[in-house]
Image (cartoon, rainbow, N blue to C red):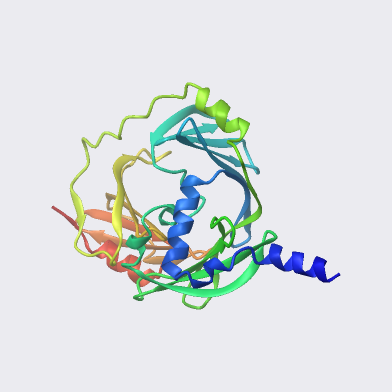
Length: 310
């Protein structure tokens, strides 16, 4: 019995060497693990009363990173990444490819990127430990340095350093969003589906959106650490109204800004939906600016108001 209990303790706490790791070191190890390890993860994403189950597989094939994401509910939708090319495969349209260093929409981008960049907006603090998906995880808290964004926390697997859970929390300590692993399997070699994906001929990368009608909108103010990650223009589905789209991110939180000709009918000044997504509307000159994101409405208001035409 004593031998059995000792074995359980070894399984529950796989490494004592990581006891001395700082919060930053945990996050750096996680960033490397997401890019270098081979694994299969069953994941659920929770937003309010909505649950989205996913399967994510990552591996290295012929020295190239290859990943596969499958949405398990709703119409069939898969995403394949090979090196810096991401291809979307959906049931109602032909496959198309874009240039991206990762598949978006699973973990926040900075968890697999430059952790140092996050230090502009957050303090890294070691929290407690808990068991997730049968694996012991170390919690690291992201404490916002200002009132312009919300806090977050991630649990890192103590064995593989892969993320097991990520929470976004508002000022009232309410959970806005959660991504959680329910099963994690580390692979000794790349999964067959990744090997086959590497062999396929995927559609070429789409050309960048034409911006012939676009104007040079810029921000006079952004919260520390926020950068423009996408800027293009297109027409809204249905109305065909020309809209400029600007995506902002600090690595954990994303903000979408839309700029269009001002309409005669008034829009609501602000809106908070049940899953914590906030929206504000501002009139800048003859343009209507809409900012959307999971952050305080006051921050979105300030971002939208700072937009100017250069």
